[in-house]
Image (cartoon, rainbow, N blue to C red; front, side):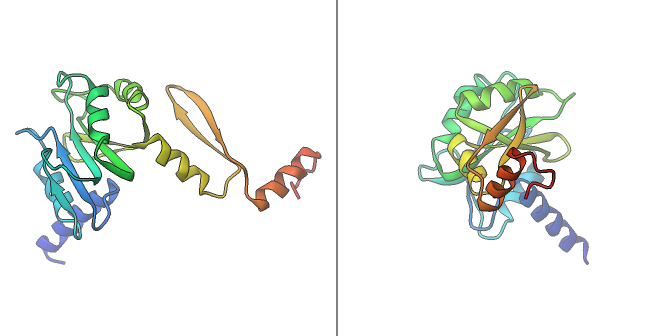
Length: 187
């Protein structure tokens, strides 16, 4: 594999890690001189991915929101970022990593996202100096759990454990009935 082909593969891998799929329209908000050009190139290099600026006035699949401590009110920025989202859309909040100028504490993101009507789904390294926190609308997050075949799912939120419960499928319903009767094997 040539160096150029290897670099292209690395760029696609970064876009895939961020959850950007072929054909997505991704709006970029908060771009400045300190933004990671390799990350931007990775997003733009995706198959049929269109990276548009903040003046774009149509529906988008995702938003790249570059954010630094001192940029203003994060809740307001997240609310504005989710406005153009299509059903099932996502916001990728890009913040400087710990120890870098403009670092935003994870607890601040954890408090701002639900206030803005978003549910955090993951945080990944998005380059040498940036972290990406992926969030979806609360409705899209709830729908994603309802489509899975599980009696319950557990996730961490603000330091305590919460449980999301939905009606289990037939297989799990039988398993739960067995456990209620005191059965060891659940059947």
